[in-house]
Image 1 (cartoon, rainbow, N blue to C red):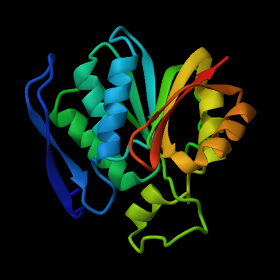
Image 2 (cartoon, one colour; image 1 turned 135 degrees about the horizontal axis):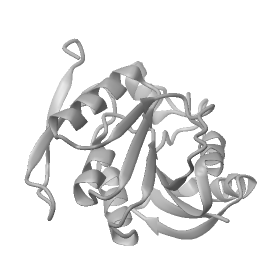
Image 3 (cartoon, helix red, strand yellow; image 1 turned 60 degrees about the vertical axis):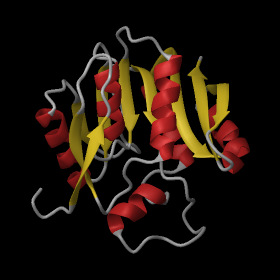
Length: 208
């Protein structure tokens, strides 16, 4: 981890936890207003009682850590394809003494026989071949659909959610029709959508 350019960030106090701090990779995407909006939507929409939760594309573990601190009864796993970010997330969980699990794996091929109650994700939002790709590999994978496309993520949700379970995803508002089409292919239906700002929407999906 010493070779990775790290940035220290503060975590707010919760009803369950005192203020704390953790690290993120400066080269990748860190905490944004979108992260905060996703956290707020999830904590306002779900019960703190036990749920088996997966974050697809967990990065340095920021959202997983925030949710575990807010809802200690949740069984949360973060899945991340980038080994450098995965190692930071594991170190963050250990330093904060949180019972989180982190997997370094590719969601395109990942399947867990023990299905999840909730899958959450703030995935890459820029379609490959559209717009500029960051010259920074870590940032490029986080922003552009190089390893995680919308169809791939929705298929992942379809495979790994239990029956009558839910997913909460963040995408550009302009991709709503595409998302609804791909969600239907994965047997997912729209429960709710909430505009975060003029360009971004939280999509709450249900697996029948």
